[in-house]
Length: 479
Image 1 (cartoon, rainbow, N blue to C red):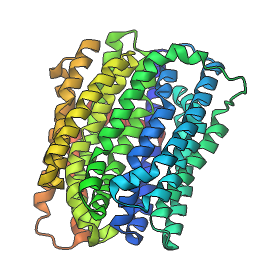
Image 2: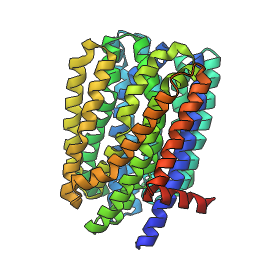
Image 3: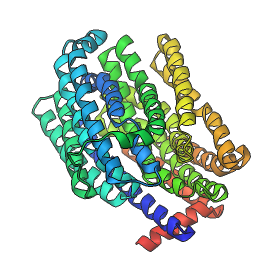
Image 4: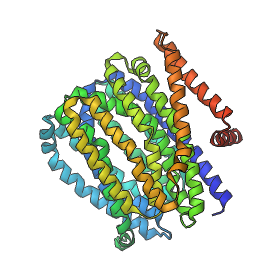
């Protein structure tokens, strides 16, 4: 693929990925406000307690084959077919297992009502297994536009369902049904837009060529899901359902911010980096450009979300969720670095080094889990702060492996990232101090956004940021 062709595909992928994820988070915001006004913290706490089990099951059924299919040089129908049937059989066995384990899950949390809820919620990962191979096909072929339509359609249908059921008094059952509608609609549309269909000639032989790579991705993803959801498990075990609900609400709002960026980058990072993996110098240039773009949008977006969290939470879902706002501010600061860490891991995967990805994630997870267990007696805020501090510090470990793969020095990486972080922090700090005397919640929210965004754009222009200029030029052409 030529330099210009790769550049065009990357730009289009980023545009459609950004548009899709931006629209998704806007829909999540609108419907999330409606649900949070209807439901209580306990309802979110019930669903939150089960999330780690669904995620681990989903990871097992996928088994890292999406990344393996994207990373494979030559691919055939048999490869996709093998992944389809493997995912289906695995998910069926996992659902049966979790169905009978539901009473023990409920006993662990001291909440008997979780038994029927778990059996109902876990249907989601079984339905999703029907679309894993189709999703991999769209991902490998950079069908970002099609995936954008699919995900937006699923969000609209599922959120309408969730709000309707909440208004009918279904409480946490409404949230569970919302999730099922989302995966069902996505799966149906994956089949429609991928154009690929499975056949009854079942053979798992093609998996042999992918298993060495995919099993390491699988183990990594399991640890990632455990790591990302361990706080909810610890909270559910040692704190009340209400406190779990506060954390889940804060985490949900924070994820709206970083998921937009992660989704945009994930849609193109691995396939693009894989295309240039045999030319280290070129891959380094492409990676640094992605790194600057990620820092350019991640720092102002997440630091800005932390800045306006108190006003945003109170205005949108009322002051009954004020405790969530404080937790959200801490989470946003840590989440600003997640897209950068994610980009690092994508490069490692594109080089075929799934073992590095695996062990790095495992060690990080073990340290974070141990820290959370040690800190829980000191309160939720202390535990979360320690948790994200370790995550940020681990970026230096990730960079060591990036340096070994593409010879990118720490100094060059810091030059790419730090200026955007410093400018974003300065803009947020200025907005905070300039609005301290304002009492009206709506006015202070508007003023914080206007001042922070205005200052960031002005500084980008005055500093003649190449990344800022490229973004503006591309958006102007699209317009």
